[in-house]
Image (tube, rainbow, N blue to C red; front, side, top):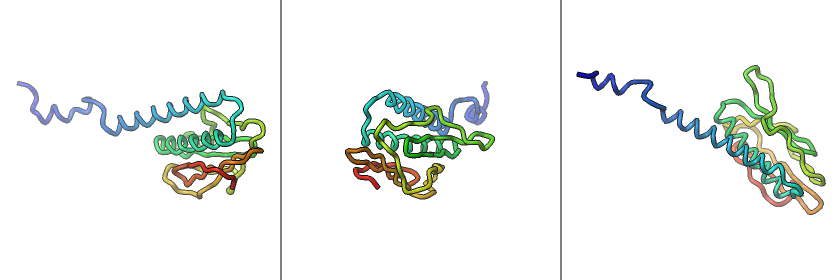
Length: 155
């Protein structure tokens, strides 16, 4: 005879839980997105629309990372570019793997908020609008704390 049925069902070494599988898939998704976005950095001659879409995508990755790791992510910017940082175990801000993104020559970045915003994954915080512009016009990235969208026109 073997073990009773109740002893066989509750073996903690039997496999992965659904939560573990979902967390693993979320991490793989974030890493894949970062690689795809990183490959886009080799382009030359990017225009305002492309850069606005890239910024919106990176904000989406920041929200995903904050949700998965349960650590805040910050976005800081100036007229020449922007960077994402995460908080480490000691409470210090450290640059993400992709580092600071410099806008191509002729493009500028501006916003309606302080030059740093915290993304914590719960949708809290102030909504911001960042504009990416050049001599031909501009695009705006609207971010509400969870989603980032782009639209034609500067703020």
